[in-house]
Length: 610
View 1 (cartoon, rainbow, N blue to C red):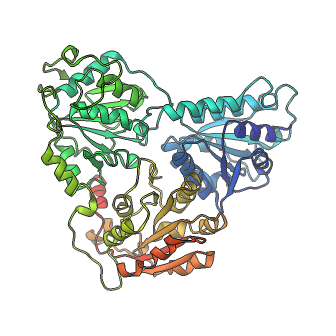
View 2 (view 1 turned 90 degrees about the vertical axis):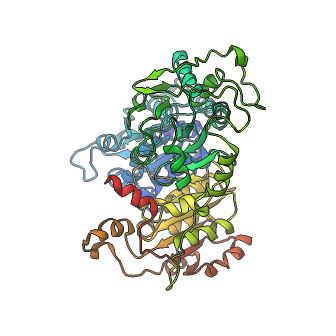
View 3 (view 1 turned 135 degrees about the vertical axis):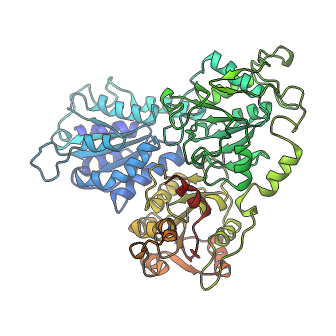
């Protein structure tokens, strides 16, 4: 067995099931080694698309992402997708061929490139160490949720691995190690914050004093709000139990949208995407707890969603994340689920709630009912004890009724701007929300349009929105949808694209057809880079560089083998139902010519910080 074969065997043996990439001479053998051991290979048309597919696949499936690329330009083409994955702390291994001879035209400092975008650079240094070094790359990616570049020097790939040092020869047991990691991930409670990372999976126990302090804060809260991020996506049960005891309302960051779907106390997304009701209630909170959430400018609207007298708490696995984006009164290092369970054990149960294992009887609760001061902010002294049912903390029957009436963007009144051959993006999104199956995965690109599909299209759970926007790159949406569709074929994948992003990624239209993915792609087309139009236009700047002639996206899609419709009015969507009824043997493109006279609400909010 040579090194390329050994690397493929270790990655396959770790439990990886799908790899993405574009094959060149440098990664030909390692890719074949993967497929020979049962790993499905999805060939993209561009390495940038392949990287984003692998990223999205890992996010949606919960499995290790795998990307294989050629040396030099194969890696540089993939860098934007790798940067997005690294910023999102996606567990991804990039197998990159490497030229180490500086005089080669393929030579670049690949380790430096990886480090520059936040990935961890490693190298297979020889035949004797190949198995161990590959296993370490997989371990680092999975256990620490890092994007790892494993460089495979061309002169090393063909070397023979010594007898006894092959995969399974005693130096590593990647198959069982991978199984153990998957078992732990299945029961893991959380990780780190949005943009900062998820942290290592596992049940890291928090400090008892920090738990007691958080319980004390929640006991004194009148209007608590929990904001759950990427690191809380496996902890719904624990957070809902604790929120019930504290009387807290529930919200999420954009990447965790859907986590509390179905709860009467779900405010949906906090931040620029927040509904007016959610913004009102979050900014009115006296205690805000971020669970596996970075509390960054996007999730907190540049800090405006945190009231001046609010006590802010952040729970995360990594100490470096705590307070990174804004000062916090209390930082708790620990797994989200484990921390929530420990805090709940110190608070009296909500009426009718099951007891938390190991929790004390209510009369003996050790929670201090005083008026503590936490890092410069007083905590309200009145706790939830004695309140009954919904009348606890922030919760009341009246507020539950308001959330039911006003809690979704489609419930917010608006003036329909459809007309003149253009459809209002809100009207378009609402009709699609009604037409498309509830079991869906929504994947959105970046741009002025992005809030409409991300917020008006409901998702069934925390895995229903694949939001590759940590780097805010335009052009990743279609590739995101390919990875998500392969990860969850049981759900309809919806790719929501702007016209700019659709043209940047259009090579992957062929990939969708070739792989037989029955997805729906919606292009919100305003013939412009709408974000720039609405940012600079009001100040009188010339916009010639960001406005473009019309493009017929339906014709482009048909050229790749898609079924396609042009949408200028809600009535144009009538035939979508026939496609949904089957056989869905071709993907469906909806080219929506949308009204774009004004910027979206979330963009207006975002530009206040520019």
